[in-house]
Amino acid sequence: MTDLADATPDTPPAPGDDIAFAPVPVRPRHDGWTPERQEAFVGYLADSGSVSQAAMRVGMTAESAYRLRRRADGADFDKAWEAALAVATRRLVDAAFERAIEGVEEPVHYKGEIVGMRRRPSERLLIFLLRHHDPLVYGNLSGRLDYDPTPADLRGPRIRRFPALLARLLGRGEPRISSRRLS
Image 1 (cartoon, rainbow, N blue to C red):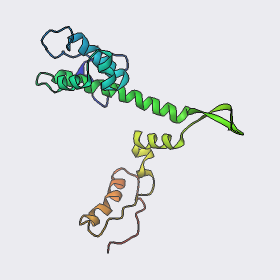
Image 2 (cartoon, rainbow, N blue to C red):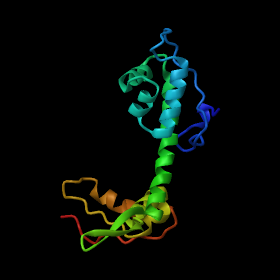
Image 3 (cartoon, rainbow, N blue to C red):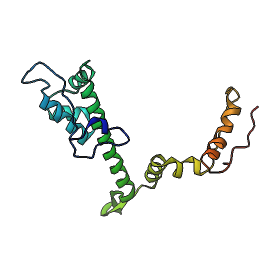
Image 4 (tube, rainbow, N blue to C red):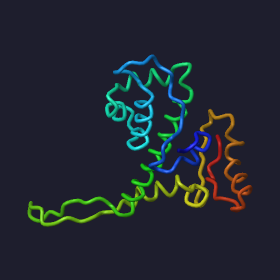
């Protein structure tokens, strides 16, 4: 079992780990949110990232899951929900990197007929993922930084200096700044 204190968005529990939490105390009903249903819901949520799908898998509705989460005594369930989404998000990132590198299968057409299949990686997706995964290395700080404030922007002169200050702070030298002047 993974403790909720260890399950922050920066360090989500490993996929497949159970997320330990104290279920919301509810009145016992055979068709209600039993502790077992709550634990199963959190597990399915970590696997799928879909609230409606996880609720359906435990025989409940997404609306009742959200109500349970909002209850005053549902803070631990809410934390488990967030930890489960962190696990699901990590899986989505892994799937996106795989799709960007390995590509997706698409048909090859010749004279209107499918003659084969090929895998096409997505360079745009890979660039996007790299820029957001490590913006200090692959983001705009490594390239040209332009900012063209409008005359209505009173903070313009200070904002125009920000990229240079940030680059100097990070030890990347002076970036190229647009030479447009405020009018």
